[in-house]
Length: 120
Image (cartoon, rainbow, N blue to C red; front, side, top):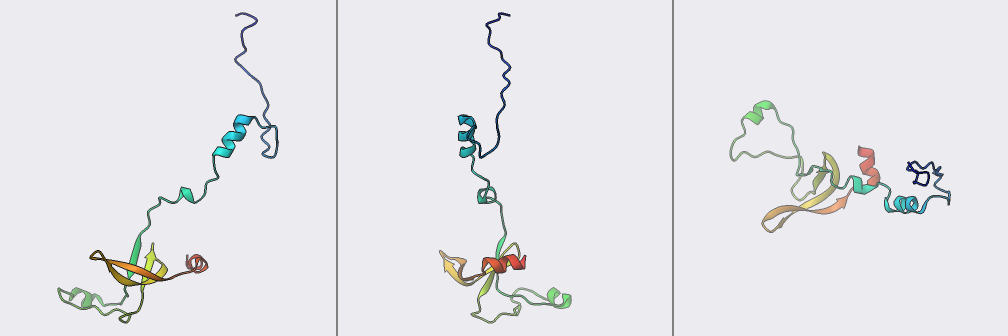
């Protein structure tokens, strides 16, 4: 090996203090290009959204007697808002609407973030 050949091993000390102005320029650019993880990490998580018109309790005997045309009374009155649930937690109330021959829910009240956290 010739004495004037480049040495492949480089011993270089890099100050990793984020407040230091001695960071190499390529490391500063790389650190700036990678944003802190935030909501982007969870935006594609699948959740179950459902609308609940009401509920009732029934005896197994009564449940087994249900058939075509049976009516199940719910604990809500006609015209009362239904509940919108995400993973079985209520997040809003709304009213039933029809959009392009499909049912939908128009939100009339959204539970505050503080209430949602308290219900968890």
